Image 1: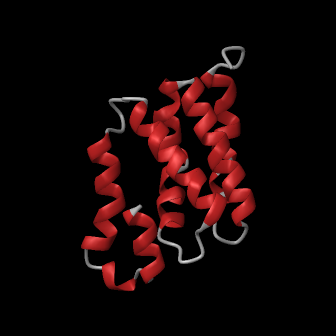
Image 2: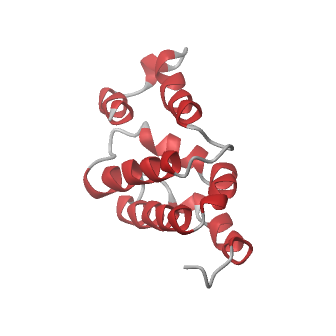
Length: 120
């Protein structure tokens, strides 16, 4: 909401990365939904999300355990990040971050289901 500024949300956003993991997909789903809500309400928060949480989101995308609600929440976050039209993170930047692990040297180490999730 507009009652909360990005500066007020920054401490919360800084605490989210450990919650984005395959060890508890329900918590990961709720965390991804929170990130989506923050980016939707404050498009200028993309820089903070990029810096604090995006690496964990991308790591989760490679997980063979990712499915259902958590996968849907991740896809919604990606849609919201792209639709924010932030100069910090463009569609091509995000696409590159997603496909580089698959096309790069470690692509063979990513589980088949992880590659399918990234393709979505």
